[in-house]
Every structure is written in structure tokens, then in C-alpha cells.
Image (cartoon, rainbow, N blue to C red; front, top):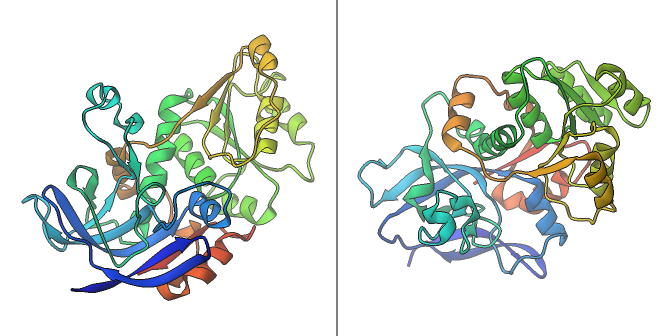
Length: 332
């Protein structure tokens, strides 16, 4: 029996373990994993802020090469990534083209074992071959780029329209680039000077430090005194949601992107009276994300803070939890 290494999260923490190489079923692709990007959700699960069934292999932002395939069009050696959602294909949502809401959905690295392993098998339906100009590190960003695109699809803006993104983490900066690509006038808010500096490196000049500036007045001054129509909350905190409600205009939209680990004290009656809409968004279109990345519309290399090998995964998670960190990459 061939043995591989997987990083397994248990009640006692992370453990690098020897496990049997996964078998290949009809319709599946076996992938030799190259790189995995740590997502905020990975760190939250590791910290115990999200309840999941353990033991579990984390990781859903990844690239790898096809090691074995049961589908002729997927060639051995091709660089690939994969969507996170594995749907049943037969429930009401699946038969009505809403597979991301499948009633029996499994999610890589959250409800089923993910990519922090030397090998991974997934259904061919969720595998995407990457073009030659996308390298194996940049390819780990396809999933968050797709997620950011879904935010824009669900909450569109007009060309030249001012809009606000709260949070300059990896996802916030990707969302900013996606909206910038369609002509939005993007304002970025954060309390971390390092992350605001990274936003400026990416070309965003409308950045506001909410700890030192009269941030709400600054936003009002730029939005006709009424606030922006669209605010994206990308911090995953109750404070961020409260800030969004403070500045969004009446009859505006708050786009919720990050998963929240704490409860908000938001007043539903205020939403009703002000006619403010809360709009969620989840998985997005990988084909559009790959196209934008391939054409250089999204800058990702500057978002990588540090690389770690698989054997140093404990250090990688500890590092990823620090405030002055954006994207951490684990090489398998």
C-alpha cells in the first residue's frame, strides 16, 4: 500500500500523518498537490472559531498536477485547480442550476478532506486546467478571485460609481481589484497601516485608516453627503458590519463577503426603515476568474506574505493568524 503525508486537524491540533494514497473512482481526478493558500476560514477552523467535524484535512485554495485521470480530456501532468463545492447533481437546487446551494453539498477542506495532503482526488466536474501563463502559486488565487467576482455579480456598480470596501485583507484587496476592473471608484478602509500600504502598492489611492481619520466624514464628503450605495464588508467582524451600516446610504446595499464568527448587534428595524439590503455571496465562476488572472487583470504576487513547507504547517498557521500578514502559501 502506497503511503502519503497529510496534515490532519484533530481535537489536539495539527498533525502530519502517514495515510494511504486515496483510491481513484470513476469520474474522478487524482491530483498531486503543489501549493495550498491558507484562507481566513482555514485559520478560523484551526483556532476553533468554526465548528467542523474532526479529524479533517484543511485547505481549499490550491494547485496541483494531474497524477491519474479517468476522463480523457484531463491529461496527466496538467496544472489544475478545483472548485470547493461538490454537489449531488439531483436535488432541487442542482436541477435548477444552483449547484452552489446543493442540499447535500460537500465542501473541500470544511466538510470533507481538503488539499493539505500530497495527493487529493476530486470529481472531474470541479477541476479546471490552468493556462500556461498561470504558475502554480498564482493559481491558488483562482478560488478567492472567483468568490470576489461573485460579489460583483450579486452587487454590481456603475462605471465611475464610488463604493467602499471595509477590510484590506487578501479577499478585500482582490474584491477591490475586481470592482476596479469594471470602473468603480473604490475606497478602501482598514485599521492596519501595513495592509493599507499594500493597497497603495496595488495602485489604490483612496485608502482611509479608520483609527486615525474621521473616516465616516471623509466617505460622506466623497459621496454627495449621503454615503455610498454599495459597501462591501470584508472583515468578517460585527464591528465591520456596524461600520458598513453607519456609512451606507439609505436604499443602499451591504455586500457580506467574509464568514462571521461573532454575532452582530445590527438592528433589523433600521434596515427596514432605511431600506438597506444585505446581500450575501459565496462561490463564484472559475472560468471568469482564470481569464482575469491569465490576462493580468488581477495582481496576486504582492499578496503573498510568506511560504512554508508542509512540515512547517503549524508555524504557517501561527504566522497566518498575525495581523500584518496577507496570504500564506504552503508548498507540498
